[in-house]
Each structure stands twice: as C-alpha cells, then as structure tokens.
Length: 146
Image 1 (cartoon, rainbow, N blue to C red):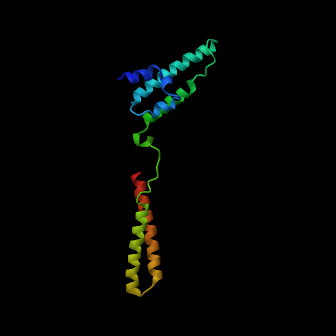
Image 2: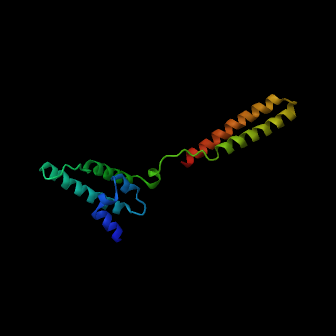
Image 3: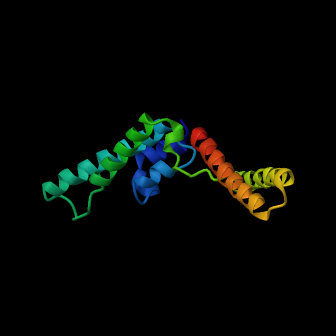
C-alpha cells in the first residue's frame, strides 16, 4: 500500500471535504475507500463521545454522513459494475433506424406503385410504415442490449 493511501486513511478529513468525495476518488480500490471511511467514522465517533462529555470545542461530527457513505459503498459492492453506472438511454442508431426504415418503406411503395399504377399516396404510406417499423426495430434492439 502506498504512503499516499496510508496518509488518506490516517487523516481523511485533511484530504476530503465530505465523505462522498472518497467514493469519487480515482485510483482507490473499494477496500482502500472502505478503510478511509472507517477511519473517518472512528474519528467522528471519538468526536461525538467527546462532545457528549463536554470535552470538545463544539465541532460538528461527520458520523451520520460517513455512515451513509459506508452504506452506499456496501450497496455498490453488491450490485454488478454495469448497474453502478448511471442509466443511460441508448438512442444510438435510432435516427439511422428511422431513416433506413423510411427508405425501405419508400422503396417498397415505389415497387407497389409501379405494379398498381403511379400513386404518391402509396409511396408516402409505405415510407411512413417503414419509418415506424425501423424506429420500433431499433428501439427493441437497444432495449435488448441494455
């Protein structure tokens, strides 16, 4: 373990303004984050005990905040890594799906119009159906991948 991590564990309140910042610290393992937060919690418990015995200077303790962040860290460990990422709606390909769906629909409409007789309405309706089908297909694909 590096001396930097040991310093963070020994004096977390010197390096972080709030316990949640420990979770966001890059380069720390989950175990190191837990050890830093546990150290911070012990300091906060000692301060709370001193305050209860009228032996402190009236400082506020971080005990509640540190305890909450430790619970968050435990929850993060229970959930798979993919689940800890913020949920993002995958819309990549939606525009392309709509475009190609409309293009295929318009092509089908042109074929139908060539067989049955020239009609712009048939081409437009087929393009609209293709647009809807393309959008639905891409949405289903994105939902399955998520």
